[in-house]
Amino acid sequence: MSTEDRTDRAGRPFDVVVWGATGFTGRLVTEYLAGKEGVRLAMAGRSHAKLTAVRSEIAARVPGAARAELLVGDATDAASLGAITSQARVVCATVGPFAQHGEPIVAACVQSRTDYCDITGEPHFIRRIIDAHHESARAAGVRLVPTCGFDSIPSDLGTFVLAEHALTRAGRPLGEVRAYVTAAKGGMSGGTVASMLQLLDVAATDRSVRRVLGDPYGLSPDRANDLNTDGSDPLAPRWDEDAGGWAAPWIMAAINTRVVRRSNALFGHRYGKGFRYTESLLRRGRVAGGIQAGLMSAGMGAAIALLSASPAVRRFAGSKLPSSGQGPSRAEREAGFFKLRLYGVLEGDARPSLLARVDGKGDPGYAATARMLGESALCLASDEPQPGFEGGVLTPATALGMRLVDRLSQQDISFEVTSL
Image 1 (cartoon, helix red, strand yellow):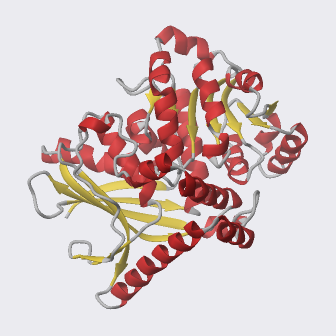
Image 2 (cartoon, rainbow, N blue to C red):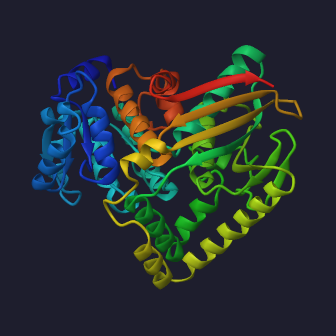
Image 3 (spheres, rainbow, N blue to C red):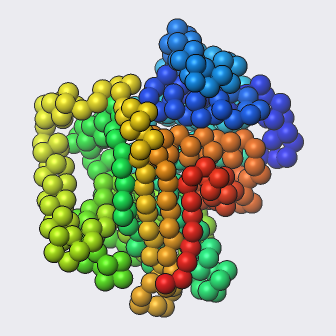
């Protein structure tokens, strides 16, 4: 997008429109943005009555929410979506499952030349919008940035910061990053449950979806010429002497690893030509940690097999988990946290020499995610694009990079790199 186009877009009535503002996560990011001085905010959804009620509820805690405008649209009505997106500099989407509801608003953003961010963790949805909209978004100068929540900002930006440190301080790219979630406390909402179960439903019948999910480079911009240095996500426990613990399977690795690899490819393999990336849970202690990792591995395998077995099993599981609009209480969200440790091995070395620490306060999937998504939207609305990444289906690292790192560092989400 030219400078003239961006100047014209700055005259639109809203800096950020939250699409899906009446949902559980939509309310949280709306509340976060309403507390920001000077942000021209609008709330969008299907029901004016629900939007009005949610705005009043949020305004009781954050008076700035009372100034938010209300916009009504329907994902099945392209004209109504266009009327919403054309008024915004950025659309911030929280409506999931994204594979069911997400593509129409993405298409409307491209048509309206409006930047976009969301919190999806659905690889097949991202692959779909890459195939359908990457080239047109790039030509229009529209930045489409999925995965702007706990999946996958800590992993993506943590690797980005580590790689930049390796190049500027050590003078070499990375050969490998082994990322570990060492501690986390958080809950689950109905929207997350619906997205997980919908993914399993689709994967059971659609071979193309299974192919994307099973491909370590399923989000690659150029699959035919990719590195192929990483295999499938490891499920069996393994001891990591450098980290001092057992690596156990981590459910979010299925999306985070693909996003990090897409970033490296979009950067022209700046992280390293033979770069490898894995992500796991870490359980310390030779014996106790090994037992925990083994139980986690077996439990995850059994859960996936059981939930994949039949639609009836998935419906039963869904009935026992949070439903739409439900999620952790405010006290539970405030008590949450996460700690991610990324061990960086320089190209040509056998052992890690760099460690990135990414720490966040608040429930990872909700309190911290609301801050991550909100700051991503503000970064898109206010900060200059990174040269070479003015449009297309991008990642947090390629679209926002150090600008977003700096913003999040002021919002209780820290990034630190040290030598080992």
